[in-house]
Length: 397
Image 1 (cartoon, rainbow, N blue to C red):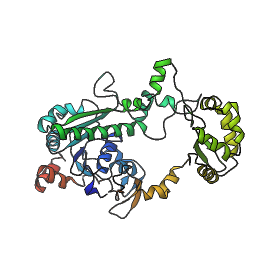
Image 2 (tube, rainbow, N blue to C red):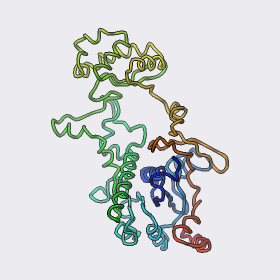
Image 3 (cartoon, one colour):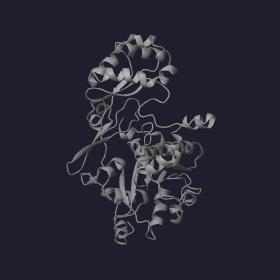
Image 4 (tube, rainbow, N blue to C red):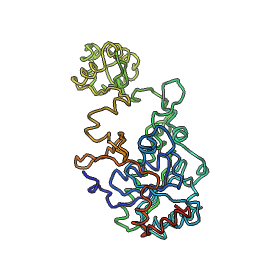
């Protein structure tokens, strides 16, 4: 499916956000076809300076801001908020992740922006929410993982709490924010009115606990870390092989029987320790020892081949290098090429949402600082090149 036929084609998005959660939300909207304009201060977002770099851009900045246009706007200049209100009047969605209160101090809170554009959907992403005793506290992904309870569930039994291997809090908040934006746009089609969508990182992380909360409230059973095991079923976990690791799950009666035969241990089916799912969970360590002896005697490829032949769910525990080179992911457009004007190129993760089997096209690189300033101010606000150059001279842009 080409970008022109994408479901959000024609939707204008102003992205005022920085770092990860807000930019990733706007990126999701861009991948769905929206015309996303990244708004930066004249000196650029701090993330542009991070290493490593490709095509003159930080890879950190690149992955969260591809498929966007880029303009500059100095919100500290007296005329900056005025221009922002004009841009908001021409937009469908505005994404921001300033600390709560900043937009109001600029005279650009939702009540004021709604006055100039009743159809505007404003998405505000924060650490602890827009209101309440913690609203003004700074937060990053790791803070949200700690405060939202996820860190206490990550790691090994008896070990210290661990940070997840990627920015789970930021990504969860971005996904919720993008879903909220799309839902508000859908509602706008019925009512003609926009909405203010609010998402907090800590709320997003806490929402991922799911069964942990009712389990504790019902019987006081507090979940802890379980390593790579499935919390409720066995066998399910990562097992070492001669040259790597395999994750397998044999949690239904049919799957467990197939695993037992693949191991050459049909006697496991008659063992009272493993006769039903509850017993297999209670005797998880004993069952793991049996499986581990078998997997450690084989290569990863051998284990995967044998288990798949038996229809036992399994997968190689892939490294980042494995994923980056995966031919299936590349064929599905999940690893996309990005080419820069100077000829440099790299690959970035793609969008997993597909429509009617269509694969996304090549990604555009993140914009150079202010790359589309003239184009956007001319198209959105009708400013002439001379007016734009004057604003640059005045340090408004």
